[in-house]
Amino acid sequence: MVKYILFDCDNTLVLSERLAFEACTELTNEVLKAYNVDKAFTVHELLTDYVGMNFRGMLVKMQEIYKFTMPQAELDKYVGTEVDRVVAKLLEKAVPCEGAPEQVERIKQEGKIPMAVVSTSAKPRVIASLVKTGMGNGRYWSDDPAFSAAPTLDPPSSKPDPAIYLHACKVLGVKPEDCVAVEDSKSGATAAMRAGIPCIGYVGVYGLEDGEEKMKQMEQVLSEQCKCKVIMRNWSEFPECMKTVEAAAQL
Image (tube, rainbow, N blue to C red; front, side, top):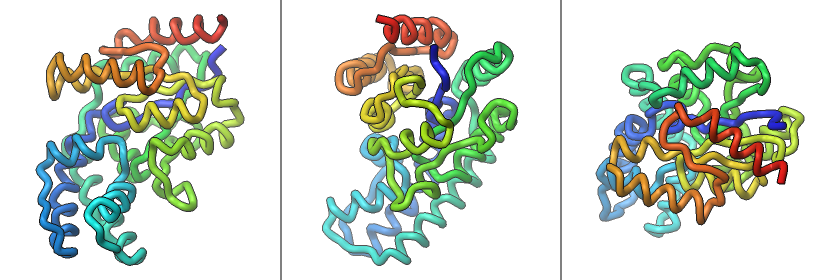
């Protein structure tokens, strides 16, 4: 019996990644210019290369790739600026992934399995996404509506590191193998896999933004590389996906 459902937020519950990357692409390019890096990202490039990572993780990775060093205080300042810009964008324009609010409501009405949100993104960003899409209601989630890697972990970490999932399970008092995660990205599904949490891979967002071919590609990545137990194209499939995961756990 599944004891907890752990949802990713960005592009899983809420169509927020592109909005967030719109807000942070300009800031990213400001950073690179300040450090004399001859690179300017488009929104699509940044989204493709860094989807599933938080902004702190992105800046750390870019320092490795482009060979520059940023003082910790300056890194913290840029992270704070990015959060403010993204939150403003989400509160203005965020919409839910089709069918996600209905499934969250159904699960709550059934009253069998509690739910939590486990995200790499900064907590204000997660809360803004949930509030704007009508899923910020505290009755849906654990006492704290979201576990966020950005302010919670010391040192801060980003998926595919499983640390935020392991932390959430510890706080919730459940074993990873007794949970189910729902993830859309390779980094997120990898984090769930490394934590030992069975994962449902959601690929519906790729059909919306990049077409059938990209959706099929991500199905393969999440199934073969990330070992997702089942792939979900639309949230209407969630009840059957849960049955598949539960059946596999009993074998």
